Image (cartoon, rainbow, N blue to C red; front, side, top):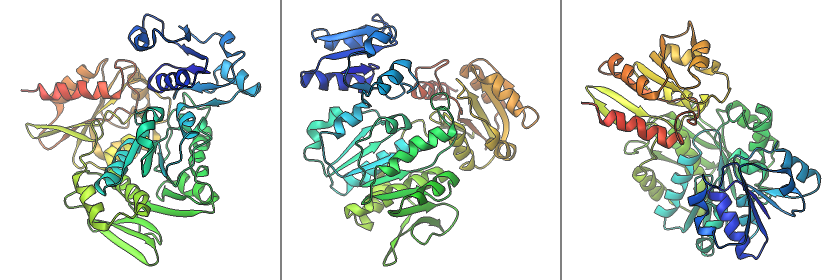
Length: 442
């Protein structure tokens, strides 16, 4: 077994392979020096290491390849292996071949992680034994013991994983939305959509599809599948599914089953979280959870860091950390959920997606934009003549300007529309840096 990438999923795959007495080979772009700490628990294991690159020779004479999320399918070695008939799968698929647990699988460009955590929370609130894994950060192979007695498996599934997880069988398949993202990995937007579509295929003929009626692409794709479908919308009432009406989430599961849940005491705020909540409730209702328990679950869920997180109100200025907004679609949701003038901090490592869908929103919501990082020049070119902006090199410089520019009643919003890898380890590292700057204000 060849494991490509020695992150969390790669390590889980290596552990599984060793336990199954397989011959395990590991390759990673990082050097032995960079992986020294990662390799320490495996130093006595019979692993064949190939670090600092992916030499063609390691793809020969293998009978199985386990590719970590983010390893591009265009990698020459993978292409050659596929042509030779070698299976290329994910760590998740390796696990799914060994288990049979009712599965709720969630994908989407934005909102996946919040939604799977909420689904998991709703199930646990109802006393169900639920296991949460996948792209959320916990390899499925590391959950084997818990899965033996689980009543439900909740999976966050990325487009990467859907490409390499043919054994996924979903009781409930949830597709939240799709916007331009990961175009540096997929060949084009159509290829990205096709990867996401595999989730609906995983429901077979017996599963249920939960989908965003307001998303033009998702709502068109879902009708290709003649199975049970439940939509959700923040714009209109639906014949079947969920919608928002006068401060309540309304649900019609069938012509005979209709109920609503109050938003009054719910901690999650914003349109994007209304969508996440409707999707989560629709997904778990088939597990026999009562309306009262669902309301309790919604009221007690605190949300996740770096996702429209109010860090602090300082001198009447709201500082919101939305560092997880690494694409244009997420920024759209962020701005839609805010009222009052916004000082918008954006930038980082560009994903080469167009910013056109933001133009009308920034004109109406953003008083001043501050662009930083590698993508600052690209953002400057895109928004020139549309809004007032400044460009700087770092997030710290952007924050210094924002503090001087912002007025009482305004919001300073970090919603970057870009990945973080030019200056930070990941979006969480970027969000923590922003939050620390905010907390240090005097």
